[in-house]
Image (cartoon, rainbow, N blue to C red; front, top):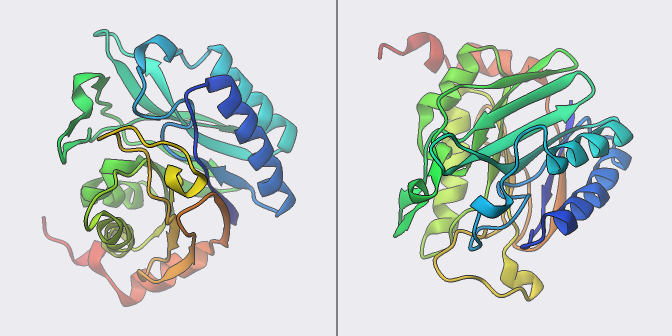
Length: 263
C-alpha cells in the first residue's frame, strides 16, 4: 500500500486550509497514494481560539474534506476540532474516502511542557482503526505517541500500521524525542508508524505563537523493525512510502514482543 504524508503549515482560516489540503491531496494521488495523511490541527492551527471554529462531523468543513477525498479517489486523514458536550472541543482525526468513514478523538491530551490542552479540549476514549483495500490501519494523534499501549491496541485489533498526525511542540530535545518515540512505537507494536507533523512555521517565514505546539516538521515513516523508511526536513514536504503488510508478519516472527508480553 502506498501512503503519503503531507507535511504542511496550516493557518487561522479553515477555508484556506481546506484549499491547501485539496491541492496536496491531488499531489499525493498523482504520486499513486491510496491514503494521504495530514497533520493534527489541519482545520486551524494551534495558538488560536478553537471553540468558535469547531464543527460537527456533518458540518461544512468535514463535508469539504469528503468531497476532496471523493474527487481524488483517495482516503484522506486530517485533524479537525469538533464540539464536545461539556463546552470544550474534541481534537478529532477524520478519515474519509472510498469505503472509509471514521473518526478518532485524541485520547491522551498534551498537558506537558507548560501547555494544558485539557483546558480547552476534551479527551476521547475509543481505539479506532480503518480498513483500506483490506489493510487495517490505526489512528493516533501527537501526544499519543508517548503511550505504547495505544499502538499495541492497534496491533491487537489487526492493524499493520498506525497513522499518527501531529502538531509537535518545539523546544530543546523535542526533535530527538519525536524521532525516537515514533521509531520506538513501531518496535513496541511491530507495525509501521507513519507520522506526519505540521511543518515548522519558521521554515516558511510564518510567525510562531508563543508556547503553542505549531509543529517542527521532520515527519517520518518507521518500519515494524524500527528503521526509517522515509523522512522529511523542517519545511513543507510530501513524503511517499510503500507499506508491505507481509513484512509485519515476518518481523513479528523474528521479534515476538507481542506474543511474549506478560503485562
